[in-house]
Image (cartoon, rainbow, N blue to C red; front, side, top):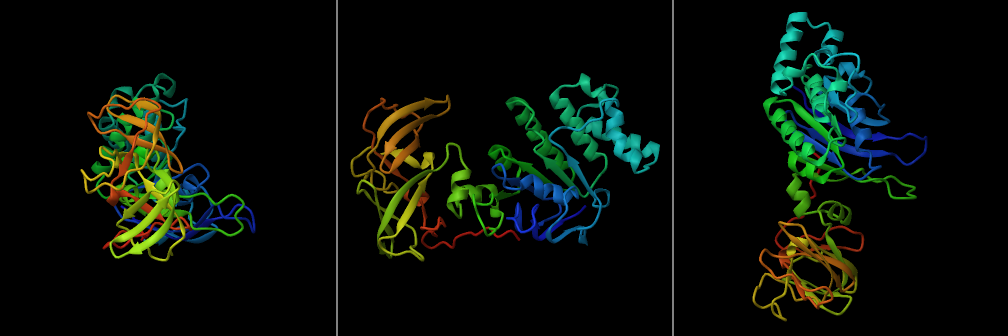
Length: 392
């Protein structure tokens, strides 16, 4: 099995242009399930293809299993890739598709058949071995594509948005199967590309959030916005991009002005004059600076009293008005017009839904309010070092 080391990896398609992928440094350990996630154009598929050997590397060094592979062909890298489009051979049946790579590698016929039978049983497609791809459902085709990678027994599995062509129910089922398969492979590493947050959050041991180059940028910025355990990125985003990308509904952002720095935190004023006292260190910012407050919908609660004194965890109440309600069965969302812009609050279970147009004061859980400085970088909470989630 193999680890994957990326040392300042970059990819530039146009000489002198802004890199599509820039300064990516990661160590992916044996047995780790690492997920690359990010919006379109951030370079996640390009990075995966560089690992596979399908794209040349413009800068940096890549090692797989401790060996430099920058100039190695795909077949020399001990990797197997599952593509978004399945890429099955239509004239071959399932068994022949599974064994095609083994035949090219000149694996003895008896050994190859044993591997094919084992993988087919593992993926529950052993009854489909004589069928052609056109006779299979989308989910069955995806299993065959995964099986074709499994039979090769590589050190590293690469997945390029393998579930994007499946419907919602089948995506969930196949996602669980991929997680189970990864565990069953022991020390094999898996690198998975997706734009789907749910896939990233549920599959990853470590999640790497990539960001696209800024529009019109003349100088490159590092492609990795933040990496670490999925819940770390969700709960402690290091900047506005990470905070805004992760979460559904997306994080609420409120423009505010820093008006006081104290030992127990800072005081920020919203657009309507509401003052919030928050347990955050004002590192590198000054009174009068424009900051951005971020709070997720589940951390924005109805303020049952005007002063919010019934729950000391809550901030001072904010005045809002209900614009729309969304009932989703297991939860209800209230869309609000608040100080400085639109807000979304997830109503607590059992809370009576307000009427549209009704005044609806809300308060935030103080410990869950994020404060971002004028550059968009998160300020650390009191008694807590900001987790930068370094790549290595």
